[in-house]
Image (cartoon, rainbow over all chains, first blue to last red):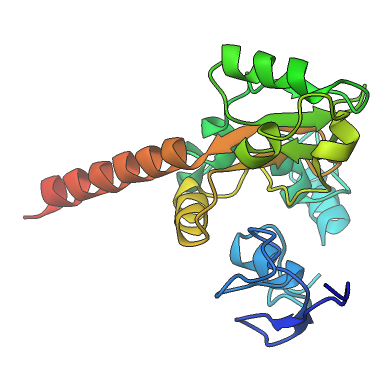
Length: 53
Length: 172
């Protein structure tokens, strides 16, 4: 162990992440970043959303 | 939009109009009532076990494990005095050395999910990511309950079966 963080890619947006934000596993085969998790579960809406403000 | 909508409602003659500044998602995340066709569909907060055992940072793992087992859970949520989630002990963490303080044994800052997430989505994600459970919290981190994968899958299957029945009855 050299203590280095292994980076993986979000399976949706391809951003670099160090763990899946849904299951918290660093080796998740379908890892998701925080933004993609909350959007996939409807916890947030991508801005700007289409109904304006 | 919401302040203008509130003023417009008052112009129609409504007298009890409020602008909930934090927004609709925050309203739903607090478990407050909603209306409409989707309001009756079960969500994560409806299925989450509210009787999940909780513990504080300064307890020892051994006593917490006993409490969780006695309650029939293989998980315990670490909370503060305000019931804000600080950590999570799943099966693996609960099996560690009994003398460990909770702070050393827990998974700190676990991923949490809001109560309004549709149960089908939570069931699908929990299954796909092979996760046994997930803490459900309000927007400000207060524990609502622990959603177990088995409960979520059962609720989603029931919903699916009800939908199939309804479609069958609607067919000419």
